Image (cartoon, rainbow, N blue to C red; front, top):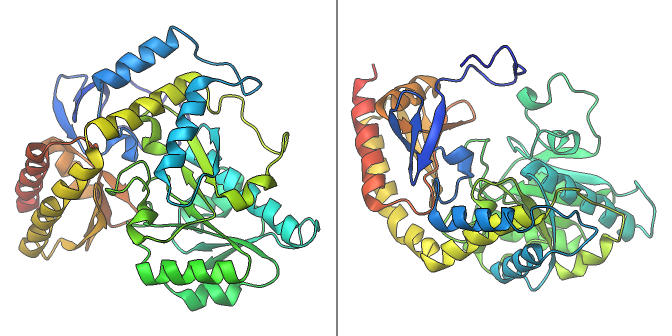
Length: 397
């Protein structure tokens, strides 16, 4: 089916039409199967059509799908309670929305409220937010302004002001920009669209100390790294006892159903008051039921433990491929099932060849291919991805 007649030209031409999914596989409209290591760009946390997830959605849709936030709904309360047990920073509070972009917008608003509070109610006096070069935080005006990439910002200026760019893993670069006008620092624990570059443990701990000393909020974008993808429920938990003042979640949180969230530490929950923020669809019963099903499956099937056990040998196999194909592969990056193959060249030829060989992947920046298997992928499917990569790399010039 030709979509160009009816859809805006915001994406490149679609290479195939997907019509069905089951587990780690999807099928196109010709009946061909693919191993799905794109997973809706790290969103289909349980792959496709997990029976418990499907059954939960069916039951909730037949009971109560939407109420608005004028009324309390039990699935939202249950999800908030569960996510509070997933953090190691004490029982904060949550706000639910519909996407990662919306979650980061809420973090930006939290930063503005903190800046006003710390200057004694002077709105705008402390409104700056420091972000990292190559970051990606979304495409709405606030989150796009926090994304210092020309391909994202081009054509939309003037942007929201107050965003300052520093260099990831360079503490001095961040410290130089901190002054009495700074409200927050917003970073990804592992940059996603920026090429799967991790923030180092020493940098993160030093940045935490610096933000605390200067009364600046430390905000983590866990949209791609959170909900278990790295083997911890939140990527910052690999660096215990590190804690943020707030973080954003989305993507894998509800296993493919649209939802976003922010968690705010107890010391800062007072900044939001009734009427200061809201969302018509955010946290509705259907979305929260889907997210609750994902949390239940992660626990029942011990998925975090499986990621911790299964990802190292898979990464070792990827590194072996890198040594065998040094003309193509620069290095292997990432953690758990957020994994990147950094190339010496553009990703398109390899992504296209892998798709033709039956493996779906996603780009990250100009020269990194992301491998994003579902959290419940099997060792046999991980081995199959290595086999496809091996055969495909051998065909490249």
